[in-house]
Amino acid sequence: MQLTVPTSKDGFLLDKYSKYAQVKRAGQPVISFPVKVTEIPQAAAGLALSLIDYDAVPRTGFPFIHWLAANLPTESIAEDFSSTFKGPQGINSWSSRFYDQDDQYVISHYAGPMLPDKPHRYTLTVYALRRPMNIANRFFYNDFRDELVDNVLAKASLVIKARAFK
Image (cartoon, rainbow, N blue to C red; front, side, top):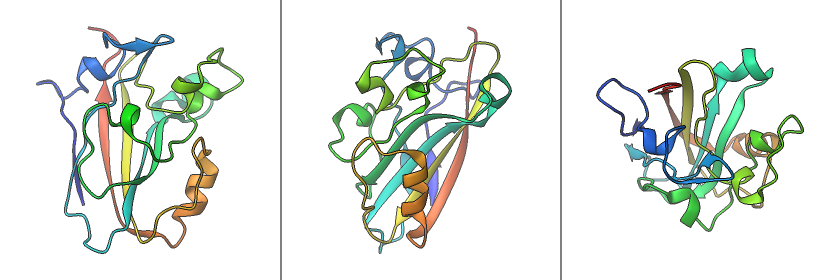
């Protein structure tokens, strides 16, 4: 599989999907970026995705989960997909006891990059599934990983840079 995400001329995620977004909820960017997915295996029953910031570890002590979604259709993912998708989406790291975020929408949908200190790299991984995941909305990452066991036909990852300052 191949993944494509729109970026600026200098290779960063477009500002409208991250820290400099005009559309925010509870201070967080909530318009998810489009993902073009090609070369999906014909036998795929659906897709799943994760968006994780491993560069957050030195600052937070853990990789920061920005978006989890399961049982996506086997086609490209449109802009703002997270707000319109009726299938299961997982809990992101804003739910951590280390943050004061209490907006249930924000912690269970796409929450874009909000870099405090320097550019970060975000790992987007899309999985082609053998069968739909048996997972409820507002699932946790460990449940997501359990559902991937023996359920992945193919996967692709893309590292996306996001800017901290304009």
